[in-house]
Length: 457
Image (cartoon, rainbow, N blue to C red; front, side, top):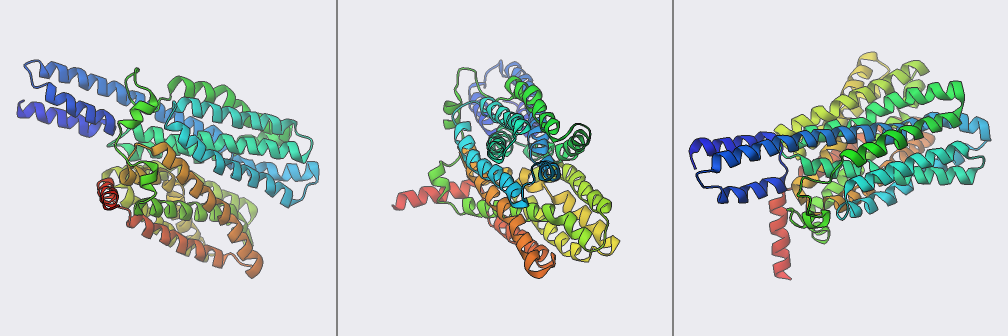
């Protein structure tokens, strides 16, 4: 083969974003294509790669829309229903809090199950069932007249969220993209903060004009009418031949088995990074408005600050993804956690407008970046063979951190009558997440260590 032909092959593999499995198959094919017809065959392969990349970006768009409506609408917009529920039913705040606890527990349980299923059946099936379950949960909520049916509805929503959002998005996008994986994950995951901003406004308007029951139906309809048909039509677990099942294609991928991954250093460091990220994200986001009001800002200014943080979060995810493509997921995650720790020090001086602006800028841009970067680090360190199962397990650790973060911050305030110690704790935890990410190692090293350990037993 000529030097120009070799360069041409290298070029389109480097820039097209072919996933690892497709690249391996083409490498094998190249050995067989050393014939007079090789240039024409290579041209056909390049056309196929271009078609595959277009399909990949359609799948990214489908996940963006799914996260927009299911997570942005189903979770981020959920807090706006708290006041009307308190007023209508006369429930205590503890009872309403129990609804969200039920949602969180259900999501924590369903995420690992969804990950296990994703390694065995098509992702579109898991996504569609999850989105339909979340939508049905909001329909049930709109008709609830007592606490028990409402709690059941929230459990349904939580189960759907765990099965149709971060876990399948991280797995499917990682399977379709190689060189541009970070940017693709960032764009897909940005659906949540964008959806949170938009659907909170939509739900607030509908509640004010039609009541909370209509508001829940407003959240349900897009999930059932838009998301379910969209994912069924577009989403595919990975690029593969039609005759190959998901389970068979999974076996051909590079990566560690779950049992092997559990014996690696990187698995537990990534798990720690998941807990740290979820802890500070939820703790700060839930209590930020209350903190700002407590130090002298009015409610409108506090709401504006939260909205700006969400808006910058939507920008920061794809931006950090692009940075990760040019450096590495691990390096960018360390940077993200480090900048976040710095921002949580600046918020302590937020009585001065300049410090508040600096906090909003730094914290907002870094807010949701870990959601896109953590799957990259996991793929780089543990491979993609059991990505679904491992992502589901990591989703459990994320939910653990997210469950304890707001609770810990609230307890600290109740004891000290100040959020200062809570934000300082979040800064330390963010720095701990940076250290955990820093010591993750590439897949090749982890695989060699697993092989060596198995040989010594």
